[in-house]
Length: 400
Image (cartoon, rainbow, N blue to C red; front, side, top):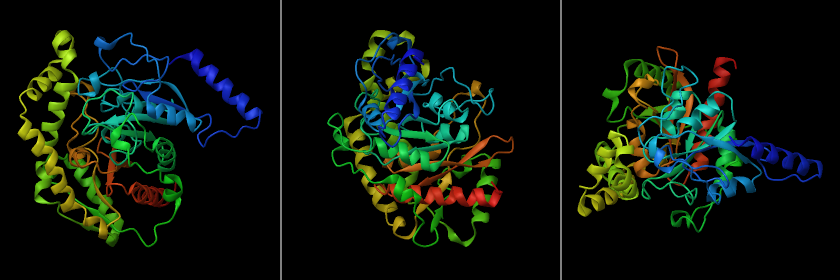
C-alpha cells in the first residue's frame, strides 16, 4: 500500500465530485491488484526475491481500463511465487491457520476481510476460483480473451486469464465490464466484445433457470463433506437442475493443461531458472524441468484437443444456462499443506470458458465452499445473470 498515493487519489476524486464531474461508473472505488500486474509507480514483485525492487513505469492495460472507469488501485495484493504454487505470507481471513488458496491469495483475502470491495487476480489453472471458494467470496473468471493481459506477468499465453473478486455478483460484473475490451497489448483480445455485463446480470432469466450439474470425472477426489454439501444444494434446487455426464475426453484435460502450462512456464521463467535457480522453490524448479522435456508434438496436440472437448460440451448450453460443480475439492486446507488443489477448475480453464465461484456452501468445519458455475465461451452475461439469480434465491431462502 502506497499511503501517499492512495490519499492523493482520494483527494483527486473528492475534488472531481465537488466540481460535479460524475466520472466513471466505479468512481472512487478502491481495488486491490495482484502483485504480478503493473501499477505505475508501485513495485511489481511477482512473489519472488528475484524481482524485488522492480518499480512499474507504466500501468497494465487493465489498470488503465480500471482508471478510466473511475476506480483506483489502492495497493498490491500478495501472490504466490511467480503465480505458481509456493505460498506467500497471506492467510485465510476465515481461519488464520488455513490457506487462502493461490495464486491470487492476497486478492481473495483482501475482499474477504473487508480491506477492499473489489480485487483483481489471474488464473492459469485455478487461481481465481479456488481462492474465492476458500475465502468465501465471489470469484469470476471471464471467457478467455475478454480482458487484456499487457503489463501482466506472463506465465502461459495460451492459458493466462484475468479474473475479479467481489462480495456479490453485481460488483464482480461491474468491475469486469470496466476491464473488458480489445487492447493492442494483447492479440487475444482483438475480437473482444464489450457487453453491458451489469445490465445483463441484473435482468431476470427469460424463463426459470435451466441448470445442469456434474460430479465431474474427479468426484472421488472431493472430500465427503464437500460432496454432501453440494448434493444437498442440488436437492434443494429441485427439478430445475439435471444431472449430466461430461464427455469422456474431459478427463484428459488435466494432462493436456499440464503439458501446456509446464512448457510455457519453462519458456516464461527461463531467465529466472538459469540465473537464479537457487532462489526458486523446489516445486517450481521441478515444473520448469518437466516443461523443458515437453515435445513440440505433445504441446501442439494439447492445444488442438481443446477444440474437440469444447465441441462436445458446447451443445449442453443449448439446453442449460450453466453447468454447476464444486469449485474445490473441499474447504481450505491448513496453510502448512500448501494452497490447495485446482483440480475442479482445470477443465474450464483449459477450455477458456467463463466460470464463477459463489459462496453458497460450508464444509463440516464451517469453512466456506464455493459452487462453481460454468458458461458457454463468450456468453458471460448469461452466466452472470444465472449466478445473480441463484445468489438472490439463496438469500431469500436463508431470510437474509
